[in-house]
Image (cartoon, rainbow, N blue to C red; front, top):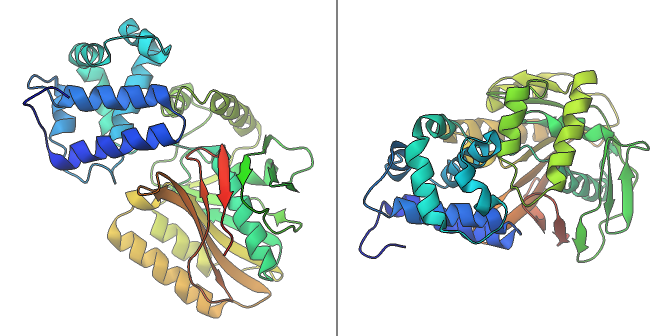
Length: 353
């Protein structure tokens, strides 16, 4: 960082934390971009794009500010408008800070809109955590017919999870002819072995992404960390599938969706399960309170034949990995931390409960 310069502690801390998160999750190129942005922000001179980041009015880490900015630069690189960025994204030696500062000055008008909304990190690999959570729930005696409903679904890629298959520590579950298959590196003891049946999921997002729109799909690609090349292939498969069988995705606020869904009839012999990944940090406090209250009230009415569960895969900024947490009713209704996981599903460390 340039000597003698500084910027707001909250913003700097957010970039420092995201830099470490990228390092711990095998993303050296994204780490370079985050570091270059952080150090460019510390300079006295700034482009409008950098000034907007530096003077951020929200809570920078909770708002995903470093990822908004990194996604903007990746999108710019993918557009071909800034060939100066090519060396960084190719993993070649370069003066990263000088390049980022110059690009920010030249392309601020193009970059600024990317800061207006949260990152769209719709990653199918995170569904491995959902499947592992369902195996644990089945082991608690809940019905193995799961009916997932998701908040913060983005483009709805994980609403296709009834078409996925997983190999989890030697346990194989999912579709017989899957759209996508996942075998994350498994650490720790294997999960419980059970058969699973997954009904077609439904979901909501306050600003859903249309996978059939080339422009919106490009935005999703910009938020993929470029070193994780397998994620681009997954996205292309999801785009092709959405053209034939679109996900059941509704434009709605999360709390409204949860309350409405819980009020609908539930079939006997099913486990209704709320799922979400990297969403909770973006929700206002009142929505979190409403969702929690609705789930706990519905949990109090749950029966063995009409069970309820909650699987959350959210960022753990201390452990620098995602944490898999599960609650269920009937049962103790308490949060059980089952696993730590790579940010995009490359590995999962099973803790059990």
